[in-house]
Length: 462
Image 1 (spheres, helix red, strand yellow):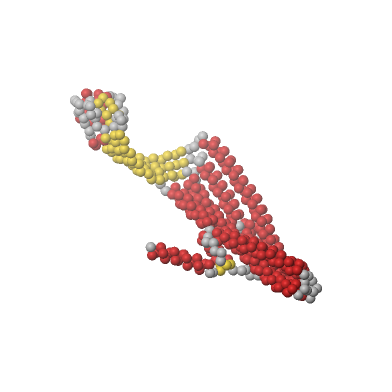
Image 2 (cartoon, rainbow, N blue to C red):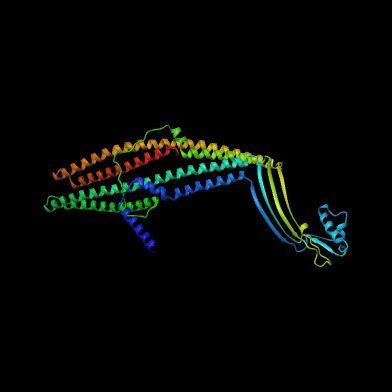
């Protein structure tokens, strides 16, 4: 009970410490790597592929099996009259019965001799494939390819999860920055409202000017409510993606105001280093190995086997007979068997020829898919780089726009105090400033995500 109580206290302390901390992007990445379901599933797929490889490796070794059987027949499996034991046509395999019969020759004519009415058989056997046309070797190679594919998918899963986490992170930062801008504009309007209210009371301004400002204040209040709801949803999405409980007080580190940039790399080499391209090559390699395994089905196979066993046939004479005799030495025996099996498929060649043609078609489809996706990935990489250049230019442009909008708002306030402009001019200047700030925030977020995506597309698999 004490341990349980301490566990609860530790959990509460961890939650409280998390609520008092500011999460950085790197800490979000660390949490996502540890808690993401997609990454965990990808890791399990790698472990599963490794177990498949271990299973395939066992095929190199002999397959050993032990068998035991006991039986009780409703009627003896072998039953005959005594005089039949002296029949010259009796199979040689039953000669031991003649030796038994000779011991009680004078009493057998009126008896019925029966064997194998019940018994116990046990054997231990081992089978070692010598040659199976390459099925074992290629099966192990195919299992190794499966591990490579699983590891590549794990890399892709981690990359995509971290990109999604970063996008969720910057969405929260984006909305919070917009809310700060709205709050700054609200303070500005509050100041203007006080100035205009004083002017209205002094008879220097009309009531309509005050109403225009109040309407604008209501619009900003409604916009802030929408931003608060958006921030709450974005935080929930971020917490879910990194695997932590939702915390409405969670704070995120802001980003550097300087825009990010990326260096252009050779598109073809970048595509060939992408994990998706590696996955296509792995798929092509797997199809070729499957063709070899299909061909192996039509090749001869050589299997060596050895078996050693024990048999105990409890076979008394018929109880209804006048005399009974049981020779224990004749009922129990140990024996072994060594054999070599060579199998040459003949009629299977017809079916295998069509399977091979089907495999050739799959290989051609894999080659076409590889070429097609390589071209698409080249286009995707080029578009990603163009997006980095475009968003970087937009950041510079909107930065200039914010500077101009801020100066325009400052002049509008001065001109209004001087009586050169109306309240409407101030509200228009304020709206332009708010729009310019929001555009700049969006452009910075888009620029960072564009750079990250381009880096992800040009990053080689580790």
